[in-house]
Length: 518
Ligand code: ADP
Image (cartoon, rainbow, N blue to C red; front, side, top):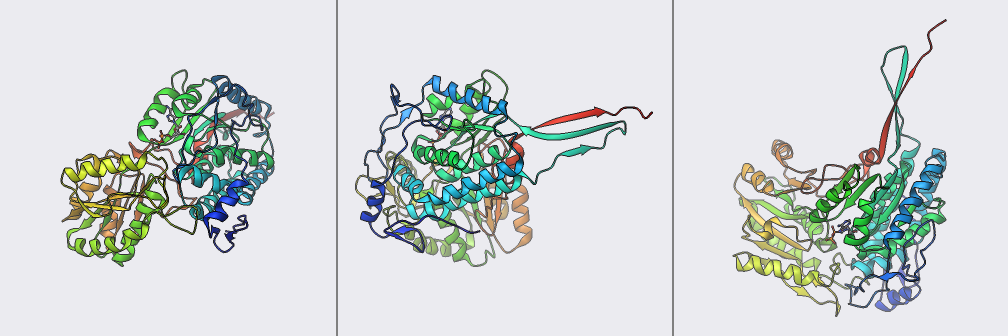
């Protein structure tokens, strides 16, 4: 795919990285930070608005620009505006080719403004700027293009009915869709929700995470520039329990698409149906197992892939492989590789160069993870690597890549999602044991196995409880491959691919009685 990411002074043109903190900060000075909700293709008036509690940047603790929370009245205005755009047919009734062009231009706008979007996300949620540019921005644009392409490709169905009738099934928009997104892949998170919902002709009201709000607001402004009519995409600023919940419960919302933690997902499922029935799709957390089994090919390469997926993005990835299950015969060798490879993910200043691991999203996260690790160690877990906070930038929130062994499989460390760079290692004597350990979780988002023995791989794939299974490569995710979890990881609805589009459509069955032949 062709990438057309913006380049700015002080940035290395070959890979989109800043070569110095000064160059990064000079660019930050040029940013115009959006601070109020986006409704009807305009920013809301900040007058009399309540401010969200100030947040410190996890990069260095600096205070970020204030954000004005949407009032209940503004939530209502956004939902009513979205409904009126729908009823006028401003978006859904445009020719497919026109809607396709708008989504393509949204991808283009995202690429042309990638630097400012990624600067905001870097300071707001702590991910390395280079990684945001190379991965998040690129994949988000790719997602909009993929769904743009789909718009004029999907067809309806003709039913094989009685010859005296014609029956068909057509896809229609669900209506007003509420999208609630997290902060860990800010641009991708919103692309996964917005692109299929808009492709299917819905109006969307987005409530992004408090930690990733600026780029969502700016992107909505860019979407208007790309030709999206007023009220088709609205973005509300606010907390989850406040604005998020008001939006989810709103009787004018026809469907809710959520990604976030399991506890919040449960709350969203309950509150969405408070006033009426509406489809709800929730993508939640995980505690994903990866098995290194006999004949795992290049074992060092496999361990390197696991490290990249659990330590990259500081472990703040819902399908990060946080439980490593190793065939007993391989444990000593695996430990050597973990020693060598994990430390390569030591957190670094996310503003310069191209580190894989930057800050944690919230200043409080470092202490939370430390406390979980310390509790596990007091209960007998053994630290192989890391296990402590680090401070590559004063005032920020950083945690060392951490590998723990001898973890009690029933403990919080083994069962709860840490959302941090912590890998727990377990040993299995038999494949049955490995599958038993893998399934010893209430989550069921992703699971993987590395082995060159196909029957073992297929046995694992068949018996493991997970919405996504990876064989010989973790996170082999393509935009065309649907993604989503089971159990406490979600209600089975998928993001990405054709399934995401289907999820965003209602179907209408139409039957015509044909006139009798004369
Ligand atoms: P995290 O714990 O990682 O911050 P959450 O699952 O709490 O993640 O948040 C994910 C998204 O859900 C965010 O946009 C957040 O504001 C929103 N949210 C949180 N609580 C609620 C709620 N009760 N109703 C609707 N949305 C919520």
